[in-house]
Length: 319
Image (tube, rainbow, N blue to C red; front, side, top):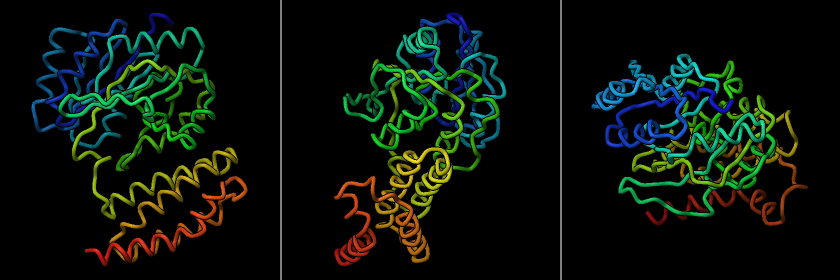
């Protein structure tokens, strides 16, 4: 296992400004038995030329070019080409610490885990790295079960667990799994399946990944109805996915969905869509186990519709 091949799948779409740093961080890994699968998903910039410079000097780098199909399509294409025993997804605008793969692979050897997760830090287009010890992408050194990982995502907002990146997986964890085409937050739709396919997960406090936050990214989008629908859809999917698996996880997924309905319901512009959000809030509110809520949470959910209505009223008056 110490020299098992790790397949690194890098979907690329118009990231010429960041790609050289990404690829440099991968080819300079201290762990050398890797294959670097770069899938150019129809870029219209010079991304592919940057990759070709690396293919000319490092036989581990392989470039595939395809018509644009989105992130899920590019990742699925990469999965179909991989030959390694282990798997890592890396976005073309992110980069790794030099010891990232070595550090995570050691966890497999020492602890016989199915997934090895490293901590990450944000950086911005000006190269400023945000050092935040309370970040949802910062972890502790630990061995946890898959249920504990899901619990930490819902209860402690550890969103690193929801992302397909920042991890090395045993190939078997991804057997039969494809990312859904045409979905925003595509990682969320494979999240329950991945964790049902594994037993133990290693987490590492060392910063191994650097995660770019860009203007215009999904996380910085304005609250359009389409944006809101995408945010609600994946949370509803998680409610349905965990409904029959575990009572506590089911509760947390419903609570997160309720929180999203309350947060985003304030900004709906279409009346029909707003009415849908309110009807969903009523429905899921009735499914919540109020015995597991704090007093403040009970008040929040009980008066959530009145809160949304009042917020929208005040917002209209201040326009």
